[in-house]
Length: 60
Image (cartoon, rainbow, N blue to C red; front, side, top):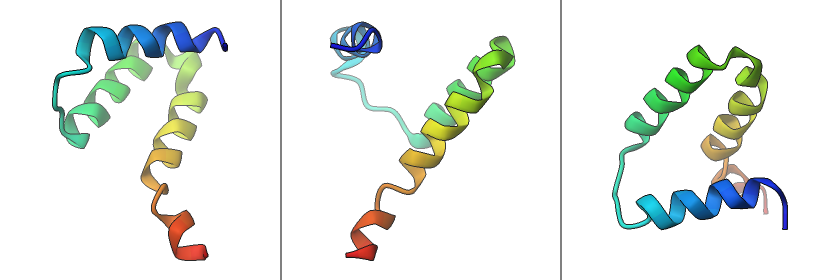
């Protein structure tokens, strides 16, 4: 188990039943980076990865 799994598990436990828009998620990621600029690169990588998930299917 990775250290980050604890945060992911907490997210699923606390908010797993909620539905959110990708616009809301983008706003929260921007706010997080504004408050924690040291995490700009990892958040950018996560956002890019999420944005391109369907691209992998097109490559097959």
